[in-house]
Amino acid sequence: MARPAAMIACIAALFAPGAGQARDFGAHGPLFAIAETSILDLIAERLRAMEASGELAAMQEAMQGEVRRRVARPVPVPGIAAATEHRVYTVDLRVTVQRDLADHQGRVFARAGTVIDPLAHSAWNRRIVLIDGDVPEQVRFALAEGNELDTLIVLVAGAPLALTAAHGRRFWFDQQGAIAGRFGVTEVPAVITRADPLMQVEIVPVGGRQEEDGQ
Image (cartoon, rainbow, N blue to C red):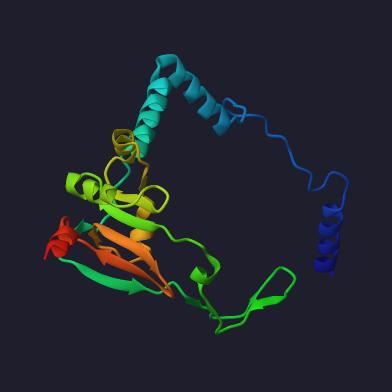
């Protein structure tokens, strides 16, 4: 019966006072406190260094200069060429609702299949003349007809502020090609007018209208 006795002795030893307690073997080698620099502190330190060296002021000035340049001469609309032949086409702005549209209270205000005509709810009746502002002939073409009350001159390239100052007439810019893209304009000058229930786009080579009128 030695085996049960030995097992009982082992179990007793496990539960005896002090059994299983960790022992402290001391420290071996140098100890260092765990420390990590805050990323915000690093950024603040870097900014202070840049400010002291003048690098921050130079960077700010460069950024402001770039903004001024972009305002004075925005990025040209890509894919626009000079018109080579006269043509006219129409654009339908009407939209067909693809699914029921509801407000925040769940009330349906437009059923699927409904045709929405923005022109039916707008009094807009101004001409839009898209031109390349770097081509003097196109600038003269845009200024030859209408005024600010009935004609909007919009650049796809060029310097709108300089042209405004030079001609005493506001020149706008087609930012990111929103107008050209919506009306499928790939050549300028392009004259956009209302022709209910559609919009009409007329592509006119510089001098094209005058030549036709003279025939």
